[in-house]
Image 1: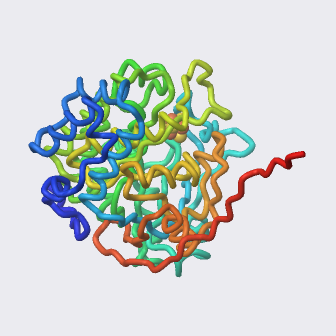
Image 2: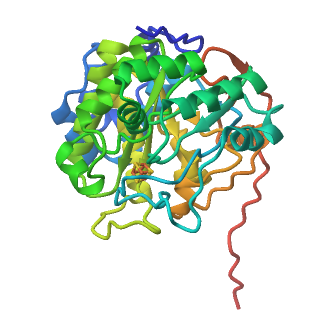
Image 3: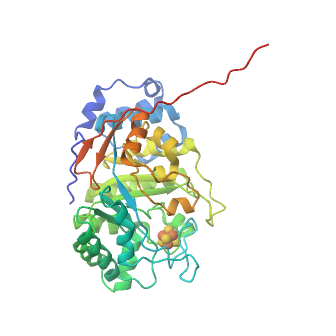
Length: 402
Ligand code: SF4
């Protein structure tokens, strides 16, 4: 069982919530007021109600309710960290249809970083960041030993930088390539310096959908089992959801339900990161895609349903800064870090800037009416950041009258 230190989270957040004025948009809607009452009674939102909320709840009320829950846990605090994304390799033996990042081994722009190259990517940022986020493809030849070298060298060079690395399918692949169990793989990697898992690759935890969008990847239960094993070894993890491909509303709610059931038993999920499918350079023409309204709806619903996962992230690399700004007023309490470099979402069409420093990020949060708090990689230390909102000059078009 992982103990996540929650300095900012009042464990008794439902009591706080009861003291908040009920938003009018919640009070006036029968579905939302019923949901609010259930939460105050300490009950979990059933799947069926989750589906109804997703389908029928008015967005302003849904977002207000989610924001009230977030406020009852964290007040106006919005968390971020200063981190760097480094992809280890884009070579992958799979070819998920939503993926714009992977390359075949013989592709002109295929790459696989040596441990020295990995270090050289971090070096320019090493005095600023406290976390490296490192994921990649399923390399046909790499085993656990290759990652041990990368992590050990990183820890030797940058002992204070936390390593958040490997999705569940990467862990599974390394275990197969190395001829050892997943548990042993994780134990070896943890001992070499792996601090946490980023949670990518959950997609939708419904196997009939996975079979169409990412055939060959780990199954839903394997994803959860791998995270369960990580939690049992004291490795905290995040969890994610990719939506806007071919899944139904019911599939999304099933996904959320599976995550909270897993969290009941292993407690190691720190943060849930929902993000919509981006379609550039992918092979999923039948994808339904998610509108801006739907993205905020999913983030709000996640906050309402995931009563046991403390943090919900606005993944601005994927949804952009404007929607992230709305998301942190609609249930999300965490926003992407400084990132520095990003390939996976940008290959698929993201245009989010990756050159923000901590000050700029803090200004984005302050300009959204919230209070920036810098955190470390595993949410165990926090620092309030003073930041003034950006002065945004707004003007209405003036129509000259005759
Ligand atoms: S999503 Fe991951 S496993 Fe799937 S093709 Fe892309 S890199 Fe490979």
